[in-house]
Image (cartoon, rainbow, N blue to C red; front, side):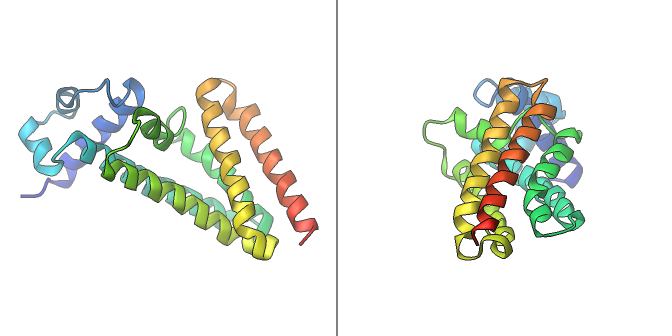
Length: 194
């Protein structure tokens, strides 16, 4: 019997909050069930392991992130704006109730020396999704060099997310501005030579 949507949401909300404020390894399943107000049997009916639960949290977060990013892309006025929209989306996403002080995917990756398959798959989906979407958005600007530009931008985005952890109070302003500026400079260089 599948979980009811409201029960599933409570479980995922509790797990997301605990995993990314206390740490994944430091959060026992009984803390998730207590926060969600469900029994262990109910949780395990929907998620056979803590790793499966974490993967579901990451998959839900990925879908939410993509929706915010796509909205930012749709609002951009031109090709360069669409490529830089990822930085606008990061700010919007961070301010939402489910936002966090840094990246849940980086947090999950940092907790495992070798991630379990379902967690590795969720992290890879997010990484490859950003990489391919950035390459697609970079194509009108960089042509055949779009994959290289996308890789550079992905590195800047990842650095921006990591700096949010190092400087939680300052990263939302100065850090993102610096990251966006670095990305804009690389885009300008790439488009000037295209």
